[in-house]
Amino acid sequence: MQFGIFTVGDVTPDPTTGRTPSEAERIKAMVAIALKAEEVGLDVFATGEHHNPPFVPSSPTTMLGYVAARTERIIVSTATTLITTNDPVKIAEDYAMLQHLADGRVDLMMGRGNTGPVYPWFGQDIRDGIALAIENYHLLHRLWREDVVDWEGRFRTPLQGFTSTPRPLDGVPPFVWHGSIRSPEIAEQAAYYGDGFFANHIFWPKEHYIRLINLYRARFEHYGHGRADQAIVGLGGQVFMRPNSQDAVREFRPYFDNAPVYGHGPSLEEFTEQTPLTVGSPQEVIEKTLTFREHFGDYQRQLFLMDHAGLPLTTVLEQLDILGEQVIPVLRRELDGLRPPHVPDAPTHATLKAAADADSSEVAAPPIEEAATVGGTLR
Amino acid sequence: MTTRRLAVVTAGLSQPSSTRLLADRIAEATQAALERRGHEVVVGVVELREHAHELTDNLLAGFPSPRLRDVIDTVTRADGLVAVTPVFTASYSGLFKTFFDVLEADSLADMPVLVAATGGTERHSLVLEHALRPLFTYLRAIVVPTGVYAASSDWGAGASGGGSLQRRIDQASAQLAGLVDASAARGPIDPFDDLTPFERLLSGEDG
Image (cartoon, rainbow over all chains, first blue to last red; front, side, top):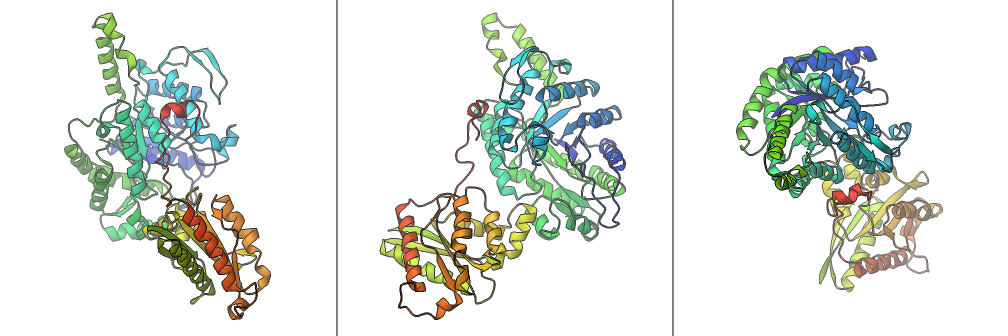
């Protein structure tokens, strides 16, 4: 089981002081949060990608390369990489480069992006969102797996004899998650490739995501990647903790009430009742997070949103201390203990490389006519 | 005998409200017309006033509360809809529009709808044609030809005369009942029902 944090990278005034951090402060705060995540024993740091204020992370591989250079163990990832408006060739190159620099501690989460003007700013049309996600990812998938690619599609200039460099580290492409909050097509896409499916369910009730994840699991099995309960599922979460539950509620309420996404709408109490948001003691966070497994099945990656809505850096770092010391060790023990042996962990560079090495030695060993049937797996 | 579900959405604010009064008259007439055609009728009335805060929360948070979810389901799973609004500032009320704003796209597609409105004077009666009818046409609902507009004075007008309120109610309700009767019972529209397999997505057919 992997635990981590994901950040939107919003520059939001602290509603309790009215103070707005500069872009420089926010960017450095994101790095400090990433380093803290490794220090407290988390497995993943993921950054969003945005191309409009008040968000700063427009250049994820620059940030993640810097984080990777200053960490030893944590996986750097995205939440999400815009597969619709980025050139898939540039994604292939940027993340392969990052993969080499980070010694394989890299994966990605594909997303479509929901900011209308970003599409035309990058020469696309939001009405093509699904089609762009499907076609661009198909090209990206090939660029990481075929040394020389000839390609022609609807959205990008054709390629003849193109080799994306550097080639993926050890010939193993980064693992890919597909993030979606509502589209069955993206669950279908993740299932087809045997990739991970990340349901960021933090802003909506669980019923919708149960159907989306069950669809992904069923189609994962349909496409022959394993049993439905072996599909690779990631979930979001959002927490604010103090030792005393009432203190957590009192301190977080002004941030909740003024939060850019849901502020001035449902009350904190209604929102915590209806979504994964937990504001309370570490024990309450543990209990709520354990319900995710009951709703969605055994899953592989849990990411928490910890640093939005103008929370000051010192508070976020305190939260990460509580998360790392009091919550994650318990969740890790509980969830790993409950997971049946046949349900895999999320793939990492090491496990993917080991699988690829095993595959190639199998291919080398048997007679030629059998070997021809081995290469058909998608991963 | 088959069951038909009739949803009634009423956006009156005062209590008692003439908008609700009109909604009830239309619902009764439609129910009677459907029963004459051999249907059992289940009527679900939605008073939007009771959900005004939840509708605003839905706009801001992007999802309905469980109580509002039930109300939305009552409307989108119905076989026919009666939609009644007071006239506010030359159109339907903001509360009325908000309800239809939070519905999923396509959830009223092919739904037979009777539009009705109330107002202080007869001068607003064309709101049915320039505001309500285009709204439901945009949602790809099937709007019955006769809309019902009730001005304050209509409630005191006699039954005689070609333009009486009850006659308009009966005429519109008969049209709605005819459409509901003619169509198969409507099921909920579900985006998971017709999943596009990946090979077709890849060949450029959107979901």
